Length: 134
Image (tube, rainbow, N blue to C red; front, side, top):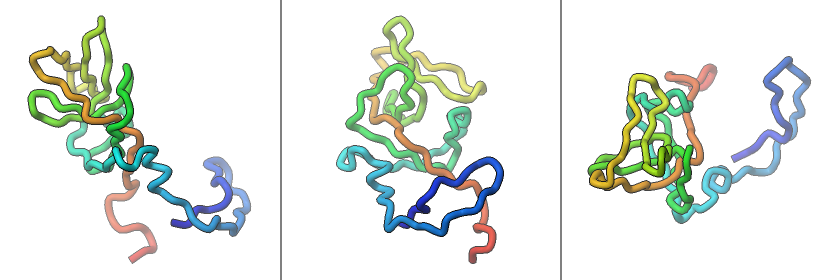
């Protein structure tokens, strides 16, 4: 897809260059490890504080090692969830980024599996049709 050749300032407007680079490979940008990365659609609002909203797409890389503070897709007791991984006294916790959801300590019996590490979030800024586009 085309990439505008100069950064777009988020401050005061400035004259824009009409320069477009030949192409930008969004796949290479999103997927450092394409063979182990997939997209998943998010449901629920437990991660809105991290900028992850219902309906967003997340890029999840299964080749990355999850560390303290990583946002992960995890399987606990057979259920998938997206949360921030925290290690407290050496024990894993899955922590929401929404105060309505309490942190979840994960016991060894729960069978925690870190499915992958979230690397990017893709969401629309508009719920309806894009202005001026049909």
